[in-house]
Length: 162
Image 1: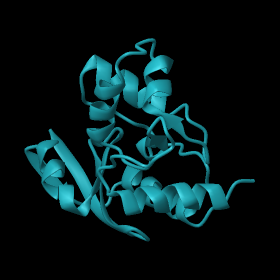
Image 2: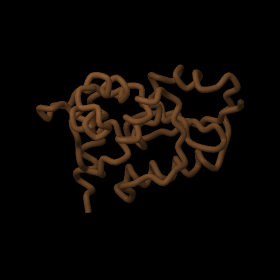
Image 3: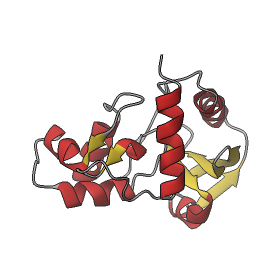
Image 4: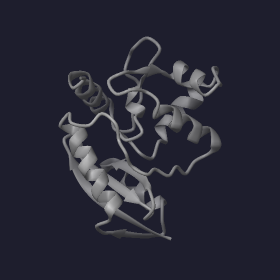
């Protein structure tokens, strides 16, 4: 199956956007570029409507004009990972949840460590907002894009709340 990708130069560095032609399947950081290649044996750098929509919505997000994304998403992961990622979509813009709260939201309150691991494997960064999950104490912990970028995204959302 052919997948299409583009690089997007965001305010927090290059991101790789990837679609299978039907849905967005990844937003990956520069340092995880090899992960993009895992999604498809036939990977083509090309323009695609889903990638154009993703770029536009990310630009709106980074300029404070968008608080929710409206893109077709496709998750490839275990049933638990998919449940964890879907739970992330329910965390409102500008708010945070702890790993414990996220685990409770999928009716698995003791799975905090597994939640952290699932969030670390979230293939659709920013759009699926794993940056909104913080430690129980309120401390910023773990983020595939780096803690500086996690703080940037949380500050962006905090400063652009309506």
